[in-house]
Length: 293
Image (cartoon, rainbow, N blue to C red; front, side, top):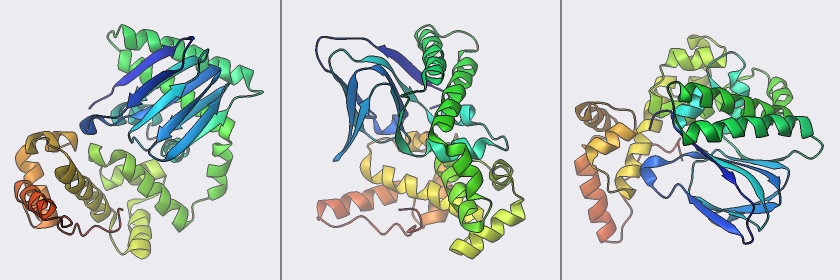
């Protein structure tokens, strides 16, 4: 998907307004909404998240849903690709605080935070202009502005202090590693890059993963990627080549080789078997990657 971001103003209207998001399975994006006036609600299946201005909503799950804003509400809404989010969060020593933040769904009230809300407002004003008329370097500007917005959200949430308090214990490190994998497995990060982003050595990361889960970091990364491929083969009509590209494989043969190594079946064979099972009213073939529900 690359580094993409969509941004638009939510203008005042005499009637409630609705937006659906992530209806295309091969183009899932994170959602961000800022309400400067009025109220709204996000529907995520059976779940509901209410907004009362001034507020910021972030959806880190990249699932399907619908946004509704009431008559008179104003603000901004945006969609962020995994590539753009990765560029905004970065891999600096303090980036793990942002990684932990952006994997959640949350609503932040900016009541009493006029100065910080003003920063977010100015960032979004520029984002809307850049998204409307992309120019050379627009992705760089958008990722920088998004980072500012996320850091402001981190400060409002108190997440920075929470992150420091969590410390570097094994369970905390393992949780942060899995959050990073969830965010970057399509980008095919090396184990060394994960360790560097977490601020630990590769040996430390390997020890924590093998003691906590009985698997190496590399195995966990591969299993997350394979599990995503299994789910998409069962639920989507994309071609095998499209599957590979959506999961970061530029060469379809490389994707097929990886999938067969992980599952013992070619992608085509697995899809055919899953379709036959579904036609008989049975569950799909066992996935075997229970560590990644």
